[in-house]
Image (cartoon, rainbow, N blue to C red; front, side, top):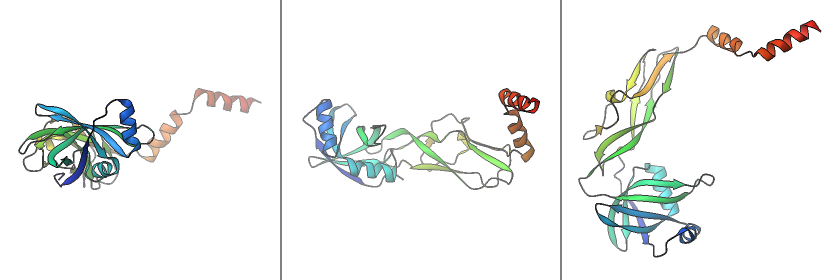
Length: 209
């Protein structure tokens, strides 16, 4: 579960705008905005390495315990902006959490086990949306394909969820599809079909010359 204490010191920002955000990032900080429950938005800055470590180890649904000028505030990462090249976190939106509150979030679906021999396992969706206590969000949901035969499917509604967690996604949403692996003859046939008309013409010209 992602309710472990992920303590981060948050600095209240007094400068705003793109220039101030660039200076914060140069100083190793991530500009962030904390909002929710009718509170006024708070402009904060988080240590970039510490914040990235929390997300890397516990996922984007990790519950954060922020120290804001000595006051503790529990929050959830709502949205992050990542630099397309450097992959560093450029900005974060944080959502105020209250004890006992429930939230709808997307969690990763992990597939484990080996399907029956002669099959291929296709993952159709890698995430599902769930409703859970804000302080007890599972980091991921695991489904097993152990021994499943070709033609088997795993739908969102068939997934076993942790206690006090409910499904938000469509119960008929396809997560995993187990199909029959192509035979050697099938693969050879596909390779033959992929032969282009140009290649056939070149071969014909070579034989005539």
